[in-house]
Length: 82
Image 1: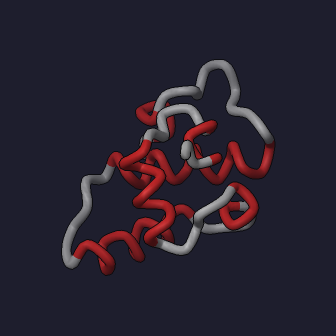
Image 2: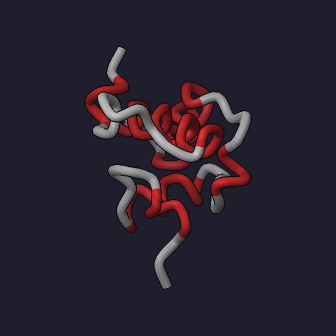
């Protein structure tokens, strides 16, 4: 079954599993989260550094969960870089 997280642009099955592993199995769980903290949790769960692009996806995912969409010019993970 497709996770509701996959409704977020750029989130497929693999990234949905990352989000679930840090305690965010649904959009409701993402609301109010700190993407930086989610990234730190991912590094702990994975046992070491995680590719920084995961942080960018987390930024986009939290925004999407809170607003129901992403701005037209920010629908790719790389649009959420530092």
